[in-house]
Length: 350
Image (cartoon, rainbow, N blue to C red):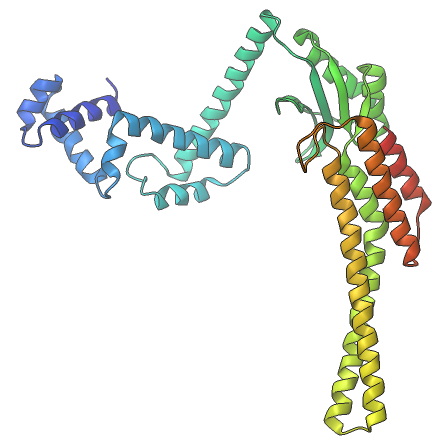
């Protein structure tokens, strides 16, 4: 009989009859008197807060397990939060007497949880393959660089990571060999593959997996930001510096009692500077609005009313946003980089 099972028996016995003696509880639970005494003393030490009694119940114990696993999984395994920080979290909830929350204990439990998750996932995958329940995959591939380069292949529908392996290179041959070996026993197909515009990844989709290669919106937006963000920010910074300079000149004229003509000229310069700053702030806001629209429009359903939209509608909307962005640049005398726009237009078509 485990520790918590014994503790629960003793807790229920004392809850039903608070005046019961240790001998009576021992007879009722079938435990030795020494066990009842020892566990009862431990229960008293844990009962330090108004809510502490709940964790002794069966329902409270189950909820406590769920809480610990949820914290370790979502914060520790998925977000990389340190064991020391999670310990502080448990202490803030008055749980240090109910769960082992030292950093070393949390790391050990998290390691065991990781192995259990992997074992469960593998078992479910084998069961799904045996029953022919593996659905089509919408894949996403990329490389991540930690201590060594790692190839990552995930299914965007389920969010499952199908492949995460260290590799010495990221050539097509390496990608194809790893992905093909991973997919072969699953007997499924990849509908399309989302990636950046690396040639090896495009070839992996179109040649290796024989499916469309879809560019991700992040890199499309990144190309636009690299092409134009600095130019707009530079104009705004220059306008703010000029405004600061003429404002300082106006303050100096007023402080030193300059002539009315000088003060009026300085006031006109300040007003011009303020208008210039406001103009470039508006340009930057409009530019960011186009970027936000591009990020929000590439979905099967419209974000505004959740109605479905076709790929043709999405492409038309995105092309319109890029055209409006180009017009904004030309109207305000900013350099229009054809290479950037051509790359973006090509990604939109893909």
